[in-house]
Length: 190
Image 1 (cartoon, rainbow, N blue to C red):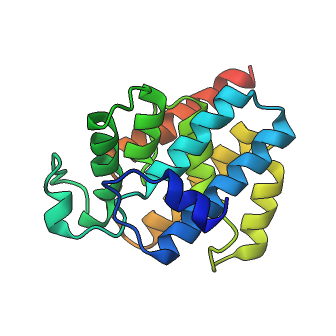
Image 2: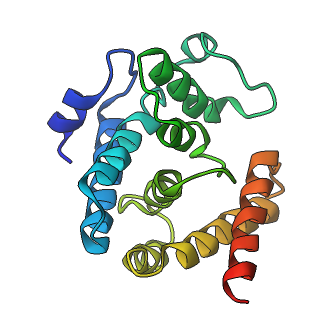
């Protein structure tokens, strides 16, 4: 999705700079590519696109703006943009619970996600401008259309392992997300 198209689709309350607009466009393009490869229905693909546009709509907002929305005192400030954007979108008339949950929890994971949340989580992390482990991330991204559940589990495990190695706090939502996809793997193999 081009920067002009992202800019046109962003809500009036968005606070994003040019780099964030480019990131949102890449995330949307990744989702559109996966959707085309999977034969995703147009209405579902439209949900993915809306989630992509909204997920970082307040990523460049300062703390004062983020505090206009219900704060999350147990989450780091740099992750408040998701819940704030979900709240702003709901106030502006977005009623699709799947989109709102995708936007709210895209930094952590969420056990209650439908496909829009899972696909946004993957696209946000695997988008082609992420500078680290590019070859590995590209390999994951290439496998998503054929094996989204498997790749989701692998990416979540990689992100969780990184957090543990670096001594970071693991949010309750992340553990619940991990347990839900681990349970999904167990039930699908039996």
